[in-house]
Every structure is written in C-alpha cells, then in structure tokens.
Image (tube, rainbow, N blue to C red):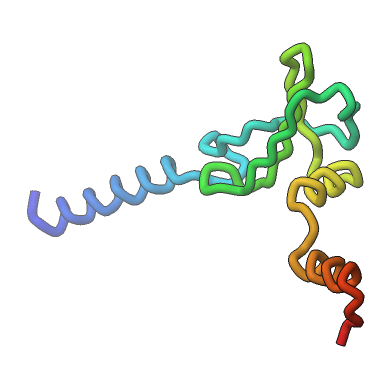
Length: 110
C-alpha cells in the first residue's frame, strides 16, 4: 500500500471511531442520577434534600430527596414545588438582605 491509501484508511477509521464513541445528550454516556422525576413529593417525610447542578456528565439540574426509610426520589426542578425548594436552598438575594437591614435601621431606600 502506498502512503496515500494508508492515510485515507487511517482517517476513515479514526472518523468512524470518533462518531461512534462521541457522547450525545441523552445517550449512553449521560450519567444523571435521576431518570424519572416527580412534580410533587411529601417533603415533610424527607430526611435530606440535595441539589446537584448541571455538569459535563449530566446537563440537567437535579433535586434528589432522601426519605426516612432510605428511599430516594427525584423532584422536577421546573415544577412549582421544585422551584420553591431551589429558592429555599439558595436563600434570599443580597439586595433583599440589604433592604431588610435598612428597614430595621429606619433608613429609606434611595
């Protein structure tokens, strides 16, 4: 074989390998913790609530709820309850904290 044929064969094999092994969103290389999510859960029975941001291996924001019997469930972050959990986990915004502090000190907003 001449050098051009070997180079063409190498490029073809390399191209096929890259397209077959490349990760696709939602494909086998996606490693998310939550496969199914619920719109609402009984959070009073929850022992721990964890929020996992989107990463390279999982492009979705995930809310994982562990219940007292070591049962795990996933909460949909776009549902009303999911948004409330995210808001509670993040805490109040810095501007809101400053406004509350000014109100306590008797200062008026500018």
